[in-house]
Image (cartoon, rainbow, N blue to C red; front, side):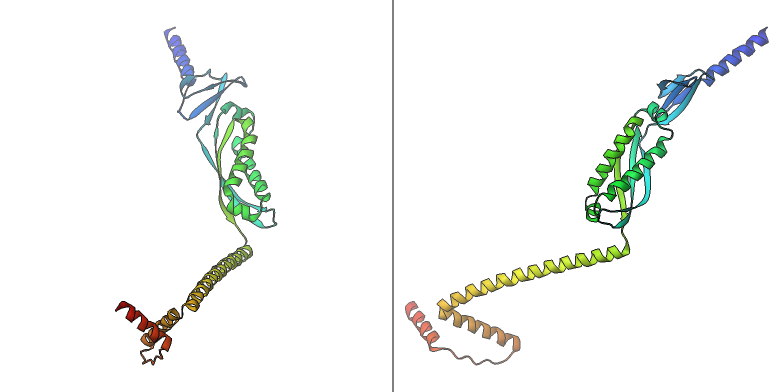
Length: 251
């Protein structure tokens, strides 16, 4: 009897130990009893009934999904390729197992089709300049779809936008034209300002002939310095008279 009793004890301990389960902090166990959802376990050590209970382990950490390049046509009929990365995590493991067959594939397919549809509703300039807005729109739509599955979409980021080479050349020409236009406007504004300053200077000199002669002398001095030549200056009598008056006033 003792060997039989010992065998029973060993068998009981083996069955009991086979029901012991351990989940890490980022893991949860969805327990099914005879095919029906029983409870959610973890983290830590717990026990399930062997044979009767079945466990499915779920990782609740944030997961990254790399969305492959998708070819789509924008609202202004430009064919482009876009790719993105999506971050999601499981809030309710029991829903992720029971509401959808393969939540990984479902999230990927939902994000892929949503990205293509949202990009197709925007023109090329918006896709290039307003990526944050498109990212938020895709995140909201995918999150609404995956919410019944117990999954939360944390973030969506467009990584790259591939534009046809012909469109790249056209955009480069457009940018060059815009820069040339800006340069011409700046030059025209500078010439306008310079002409206004010259007009004011001309009015000042016209009101004061002495100032005009002094400016002429300064110009001749600059010419002589630059060309290293001898310059003969004819001084008008009005200027001599003006200097004489100034000298007499000082004395």
